[in-house]
Amino acid sequence: MSKTIELKKKVLSENDALAAELRATLGEKGIFSLNFVSSPGSGKTSLLERTLRELKDELNITLVAGDVQTENDANRLIAAGGEQVKPLVTGGSCHLDARMIHRLLPEINLDNTDLFIVENVGNLVCPSGYDLGEDMKVVLISVTEGDDKPLKYPSMFRRSSVMVINKIDMLELCDFSMERVRENALRINGDLKIFETSCRTGEGLEEWYAWLKEQVKQKKA
Image (cartoon, rainbow, N blue to C red; front, side, top):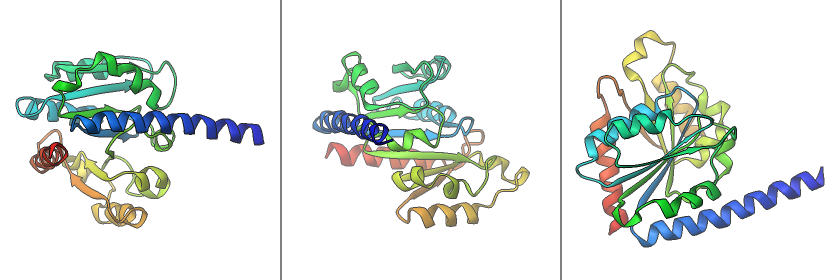
């Protein structure tokens, strides 16, 4: 048992060292970076598609699209107008790590990047323990999931800076309380910035875009 614990500590230590190096590299260039996490089907890719379409003329966005087996999400993001989208297929791993991102850097034009986004593998457990060198984690849930999600996966919500509640156009069809999910999330992390969005109707997206642009502006300053 002690050997297993030591191995895990070593892996995480090596990951954190690489993540610190990535954060320094991005920071030196004034690049704002986000690590998107959610369970499968919450709408990460849909939100990123809308974001690319609306902001591609204002921000230079680099996207790393993580997936277990396919490049489907990366292809969707390219079709949405992403000019610098890099697929990252894990081949079975349930999360991305800093080493994977580090290996991709030589293929990325950081001098032409304002916003660096990593779309992590759909999973609210494993990715919570891996720093990818991001400025912030964004955890996304949808109203088609339970409003107790923050209580079931506290580590992810504790380590995130932003929560996006997606698919709010379906709220009337679901047994989901916006009041309860906010209460549950803020009980875990009282500093969470919360957005409510619908990628189908566009509700709440302007606030999301404005926040992204402001974060990019502050990072460059």
